[in-house]
Structure formats: C-alpha cells, structure tokens
Figure 1 (tube, rainbow over the protein chains, first blue to last red):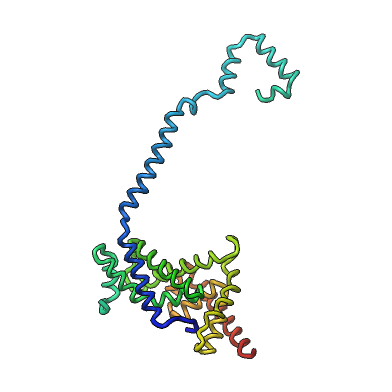
Figure 2 (cartoon, rainbow over the protein chains, first blue to last red):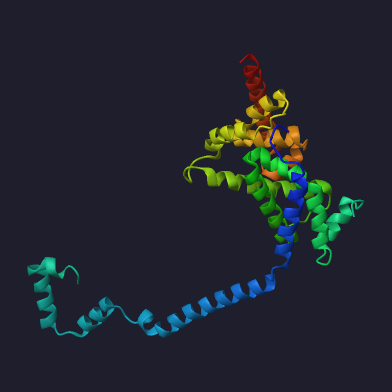
Length: 96
Length: 187
C-alpha cells in the first residue's frame, strides 16, 4: 500500500483498540441508563405538575368568551352604545 | 483462540459471558483490513487510527444489534460501521454543512502527497492518486471491490446501494482510474 506507516503500527493499533473496547466494557452502563431514565421521569413529572397547577388558567374561558357572555346579558342600551362606538371609533374597536 | 471458526466466534459474540474476549479476537482479525479501508477514505494515519478505534467501540457497544450468522455478515457489519465512521471524519472537514463530501477531495489529494511512502511502488502511487480523486461513491465501491475483493452483494449490504448501482459506479471508477493512470504515464 503506497501510504506511510510506521513499523509495528498495526500491532499498536490492535492494542489501542483493544484497550478502548476494554474501557468501554467496564463502563457502568446500567447506572448510566438508570440516570437517564431518572432524568426523563423527573422532566415528565415537572411538566405534569405545571399542567396541573395551571389547569384553571388553561381551561378558563378566554377574554373574548367572557365578553360575549357579558354582552348576552347586557341591556339593549349598552349594546346600542357598543354598536355606536364601533361605527364612530372603528379603529379603536377592531380589537373587540 | 486463533483456531476458532467464524461461527464459533459469532456465537461467542452473542453471549454476554464471552463477548469481551470474543471481541478481542474480532480486533485481532479485522484491525488491519479495517485500518486500510478507513485509511483509503480519510488518507491521514492519525484520522484513520482514531476512526478505527471509534469503529470498534461503536461495534462493541452495538454488538447486541448484530444478527448475522456467518463471516460475510460480520465483515459487512464491521465495514458498514467503519465506512460510516470514516465518512463522519470527512464530513467534519467540510467548509460548511451543506458542502458535499466530494468537495473535500482536493484536500485529500494534497494530504495524500504528504502520506506517500518513500519506498512505494510508483505505479501503486499513481493508481492511488487516481483513486483518491474519485467521487466518494465510486471511490468506496472501487476500494472495496479492488483492494478488499468484496462481492457486490456484500458491498451492497455495507453501503445500502443496489447491486446494479454499485456495478455502474464501479464501471465509471475503473474507467476514470484507467484514464488518470494513462494520463500520468505520459506526464
């Protein structure tokens, strides 16, 4: 092979690879797996806790729904004022 | 241990009790072949030895996923890991992430000029110079067919390409290598 290579390099590579695999085989894989599993479960628990704590806010009626609710019970005068506002101040009431 | 058949070796790899020493035997048998396979892809010795070590560690940690029963499947599995690892080394050399692997060919060619053994046969040097300049897919199939004498079916298991695609790539590679070598002859 027309590449430079030191004498005895292949034997050195065998030893190097064997040593690397030996280090890998002695690494406590189960401990690493338990650690990863623990971290994942903790993250899931935190997310679930946040969802439970904020349940009311998540499922509460929106501002728009509350507004429509109020309007449905409002007297005709208020509704009339709203419509007039909309006609006269269209730019300011578009958010409604 | 050296007298162990490949089937016995594969069975030992699948048993948790014997996997460690069986893998030592894999290293003993495959280091040289895989080293040269990787070296022909990455060119530099330093990159080749790092990629070889990473390949064996990857193979060892994923030994549970190896389902082969014979020498061909073990060889193909190890070559696939080694090829992927060597290509990862080349990907790190690209100027930006969207550049193709062939864009590093010019760099490989200049690396090769520094890696030529002073006592190497000049025809082999010319041949290797032509091979290094090939596009990556053609280079991979040429190396595995010409140097490692693997069948197209085995190369197909390594690269994931169809046999007909590999044959086409090999055909173009041989054509380009012949052309490059003959051009170099006249220089």
